[in-house]
Image (cartoon, rainbow, N blue to C red; front, side, top):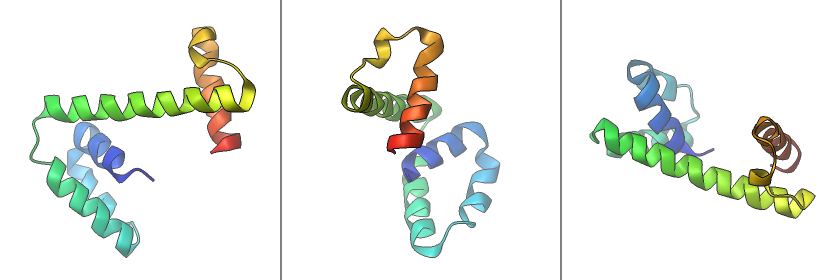
Length: 95
């Protein structure tokens, strides 16, 4: 679980619900998430968006590498309609 991405998304989409939602996490994970949140919540929105975009780009790169390893294909070579479907399948079957 990428706690930074959860905190970034929460701050960008529903900041008023983020802290109460973190209370649902188990103690060691909750403490780590609250630590991540405290370092992120003071950042301006453009920086939050930049970090979110960077995490998404890194995630897409890893999925692309998984596609090559698992299936021998390049995600970006697929038709756009199939890219997300194949990426979802890879996550479901290869983590």
